[in-house]
Length: 88
Image 1 (cartoon, rainbow, N blue to C red):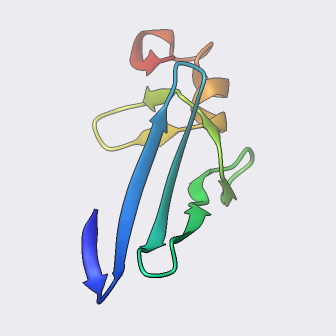
Image 2 (image 1 turned 30 degrees about the vertical axis):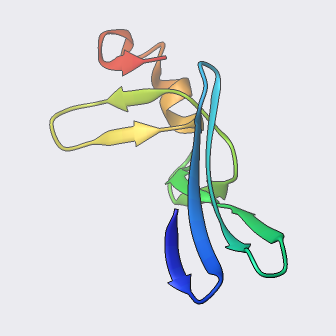
């Protein structure tokens, strides 16, 4: 938590579960006793090229080589092809 303005603070949250992961942040207004929470849409490689964004993604990392690291849905689909370099 960090003070960003008088009476306001922000917070970060990571939910790294065994199956799915997500990241969020928010503002706390201590004077009004309110909280505004935002879930971050995480960009990841999409099937067939390009990128997509999702608020929750599979907790999978694929290292195709020393320069290419993939996370989420695409990494999950690469597991069968690159079993020795994928962490489910």
